[in-house]
Length: 324
Length: 263
Image (spheres, chains in turn purple, brown):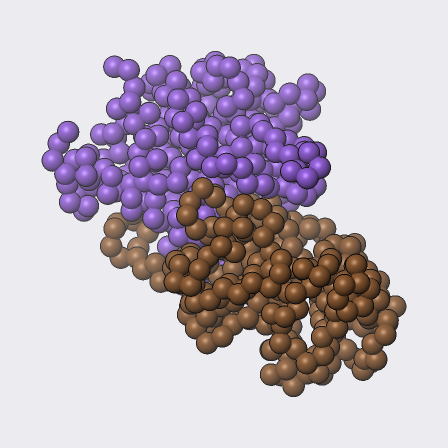
């Protein structure tokens, strides 16, 4: 290991596909609402935004009211959520652009749906709007993250659990945009590399993983499922070791494909571990629920972790955990 | 400022950044405990109805606990806690001098301006925000009447934590005060016609207070509780149904108009 560096000798910039990022950290979709932070921040939150890019909560073609309460519960070293993709639908979402158009960060739009046509409808509407909108009236949308952890309208199974169904979603969206296209993979599969290969072959520029693990918690009095939706998705530190393994699997199988790694990142060292497993960028999810200043702290820690190891850039750490 | 550089940002500028508080006192009232924490920044900004997110000390718990502000005393905030599970049990085990992290104040406030007469209705741990509210109302010149309902004798000891001139208590088992619910108390009260109702408690109680207020021709506010994850309005984990659609308890709430909740 090389001698340690001063903090200002570390250059955190990374390139995710064709998107330049000031550093490797993004927010995991659905865990960080810029409007909510900005309206209460004592200062200009749009200038002080802590993540290198903003991934908003998943948007779908039509409005969704989401799942019945309770929607969240804590579990050992983690939590289970079953929000149900509550969102206003793409038309209303676009109508709200004025409120956060000033955000000085690239935006990667998380898109959900229950069929390839649903995803295509969202991307088509956004691309049409962006093509016609006056300069400065929209956030700086630079890409899409296809959230394929939604049930397929025809089979009821998670789209992301089926390589062909996932590829069909990518295939429906790819012709509609030249922007960065990521596919967010579900970990609820026996071989995540099969889905990764399928979506890349269909035109996805990169993949993000992992989404949450399907899970269940019981009401300790009644022994009935606690969540209104019966099951939900497990996230937090409990899933980090599995997420690291899955990121490494994908990075080894597809060494040239950019990966956004995530799953229980609570510290800068956690983020660095995802980079060592092959991630180009790292998303922070549940840690946003532990402290509002968590993103800035994790970024400071990541810089210090790189410096302490004499690693001048995230790229110098990328893949250190992989087989040569 | 946002280029990822280690210098050039100040945590003090952030919204509701984590405050490293210290326990100034812990008093136990039957099933409830009053935790007082030195937290000047929060104490300076807080208004009745708001809450804080409290980190369970000692590790092992991912999510913070949303707790209503029970009182604000100079540079300290007080919280009323009912031990319901391992996290709240650990919080009630804190002792004077212990470190505890918290963030806030968060959420909407009980409107108090222009109120001449107020009726505060609380059920169980839902009574927690009503002490702070009562003090603010009295300061604003309002006449305050309170009706609290508890399960049993042990829970009703929480009434000892409250300092209110007109406080009526009901218990389901009749061990303290009137036997029955808060609604049984309300029926016997003689209130001025423009009295504003403030309610916080279980859903069934809020619904009953809502019906009673409608029948009595009184308007008011309800503070709701929900299972919460982020406390920042981000995760949509704590939404409730209202006349305005699904709203977040942590962001649009916890205080809502009494006639818009439980549609």
